[in-house]
Image (tube, rainbow, N blue to C red; front, side, top):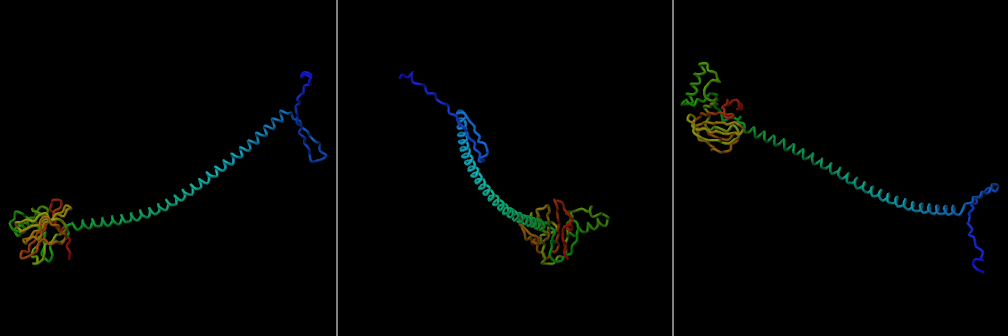
Length: 269
């Protein structure tokens, strides 16, 4: 038979029936028919959903694992930062203790230095007595045009008798000692530097001490000076030793001007 004589086979479309059976024998059995296209669509959709669920599950697992690792890493970082914080707090506490000790030491040192400076400043004030031993002491004026000490005192007594006030008397204030005991000493009234040692026309010699604070003290006596210009002296350093000539003159200057010696001198006894 020729091909044309052969009967043609028709491809039958397959359909699908979904049977829904209830466990209850009295219940009706439900059927649902779906065509091949719908069946293929459902199969494809089911496969796609299955693949999606599998991929999503894998992604979720990887994400959870990654988040867990990040969480663990953050916990380690928090632990490390906490330890560093505790270490810094401890170090800060130690530093505060060190600062407190240093501050206390500095304060103590400052107090000591201030006290030492004050003590040194007090030592340089010419407040001491310029003579050791007993003597007669009067405050008078130094008249440089008078030939002798007695002449100066006599002229001043005359001026005073004529009613001239103390502030109007000529000459500079001077503390005058007479009848000083032999063997006693003329001493520095404060620490300083010997500025000069030279002759004095009425007393014999004079020693001038610069105390470095605006004060200068002047000592006059006929004995041999025990110091030289440039010597550093302290309060009580011997300047003259009293021998047969027992007359001593003592003056003070502040910022170049003569002042009353008794305004600074501390007299004991």
